[in-house]
Amino acid sequence: MYFPTSNPLVLANEGQGVWAPADHQRIISKLTIGLGVLYHHKKAIQLEPLPETMLDDAKASPVPDLSLVDNTTDETPIIIEVCKTNGQKGDIAKVIQLIDDDLYGIREGFIYNYKTQQWYRYRFGDGGLIAESSFSEILQLDLNTFI
Image (cartoon, rainbow, N blue to C red):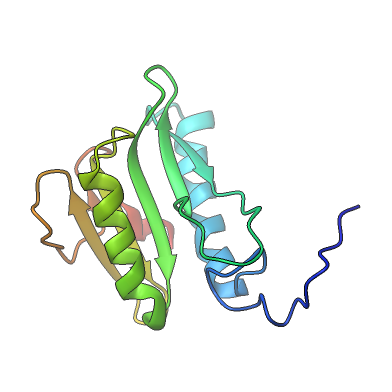
C-alpha cells in the first residue's frame, strides 16, 4: 500500500494533492455515476466519463476533474472542472487555455462552483467569453441534473 511522505494536512486544500475536499469529490462522483449510467448501461451517449487520477502531490493538476472521451477518435470533446470560489478564476483560465490550445479536441468545457452552485460553460471559438450554463450542446443534456 502507498503512503505519501508529505503531511496530509498540507495537501488537504482543493487542487493541491490527492485529498480534495469531500464536497469536491462528491460532485465528481455524482457526475461520473450519472454520465456513466448513460454511457455504459443505457448507451444513450457516445462519450465515456473518466475522472481524473491525481498522482501529483504538490501542485494543482493540469488534468480536468472529469473528461468525456470519444474512444473511437481518442479525443476529449468535453471537460468538467469542479471548484469552490477561491479556485474558480484559475479553473476558468485552465478550461479556456485547454480548449483554445486545441490539442485534445475539446469543444466544451464546464466549471462547477459547488459553493455557489453555479455552472459556467466555455466552447471552442467563444473567444474567451464564459456563459453561465450547465447545458451541453454536444450531449444535449443539462449537467446540473446529475448534481
